[in-house]
Amino acid sequence: MLKKCSSLAEKLENLLSQTHSEELSVQKIMDHLADQGYATLLIVLSLPFCSPMQIPGLSTLLGLLILLIGLKIAFGHKVWLPKMLLQKKIPFLFLKKVMFYVLKIDTKLGFLISTRWVGLVRNRYLHIIHGLTIAVLAFFLSLPLPIPFTNLLAALPLLAFGLAFLEDDGFFILIAYFFAFICLLSFAAIIWFGIDWLIVWKKYIF
Image: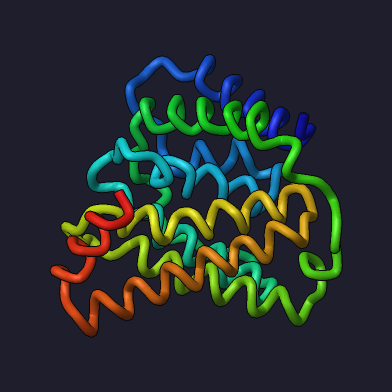
């Protein structure tokens, strides 16, 4: 069992129990999870896009938030978030969905994640590369494209980065870059060959 994942699930459960409305502001969510660090925010903001059931209209907002977190990881400066973003409302359903998947990761994938190859996670020069990669992936996530699975392509590596940072797992950093490569290759193919390429690709994969 992953202690930090369990702690995140408890934090989310506590936040949900204190909420008596159908929406929460970005500010309230970030304040509640502030002590958990940017790894937690990466997981919380990317997880919902890793499932087939998407929540419309959130990818642009959350993609921008993740992009700013990526710049924070790269350059170490305090993340400045526009007031307009902080006042945006997130559906209650979104957090319930996140908590469900955090618990699922903890129980189903916990045995795969551990503290190892820490240098790949904590090296300050690699941090710049990690942060910039996260920012690029977040940009792709934020694009309002009416194309199936494009959110998933960007969200999977972002989630892997979050788990790697959360547990200091260098192996998951490598997994994150593997998924990031697939994401970048797919978007390059979409730009070069058009949307029809993705539709054909989806038929072979799924």
